[in-house]
Length: 393
Image (cartoon, rainbow, N blue to C red; front, side, top):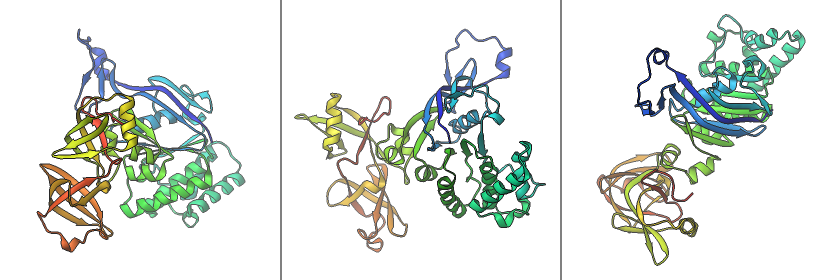
């Protein structure tokens, strides 16, 4: 159990070849296809990273592949050097502390089990290195095995276990150390969908039993939304937003967060316009004008926001089929049990609407059927064209 603080953390991967070459006169940063910042020093994988993790908090770092989330975890563990900034665990600066002395346990994506050892030996190995008494080792291993329901597999070797069982062993090996901080780097990504759901539930139960500080990395937003007390959303090495699952879903800070969080993805319209008439704001999309909520009105008025072209976002679950609104044509309908996913075309823009089957009979709709789309005030998101930030911050 511990607090973790990261202050102005930066990670630069230097290019050995660059050291041999003389720098060009123009050494201004450039943008590569990966969108990571390239400087004369090298590739900046993480920059301006600031995070305060409370004791016993479960933090999830989420983002697309290559955004720097695993690099952050490895810097906390001591497996990557911190280029700039400071890392504190329980108030103690850890930048120069060896990984073995940080009292941190890490679970890797590929399990990293010793194939020649039994499950028991894998779990006991770190304690044996610390010269822990045999009786204590046996007690801790069996307690962890009971928590994870792998007692029956203690005498087996990893090759005789399924993927889910191996991951439980990897977690058990970390639990026996009773670490201050528990780091998990995409631990479920190698499992099939059904097993991933089961293991996600197991991690939630595990957290209640061992009651320690967790930092969890994933690219799966479903894992992030269900596991985390707070979510850290990253892109190209930079934090985009930190908040509870509900906050990042309901109040995305920018266009990237809005489109990354939520499934199906948020519908985006690039040709909307913010209007100001008689002191009241509304938004026009195609030939339809939508009112904004009182809360949204207040935020726009507080900043004296001018009329402007904006990107309008609306989540599929917030799109309604009505008698009036934006005209659209049905391209495809997907039956998802209790819901229908309607794929529509509204003046050239693809739109997805999620409608309960209690409201719309799947057998009563036809391909290319005309429909009208409406949005409730308060559920509309508006983003600036210049920097893609929300207008409702």
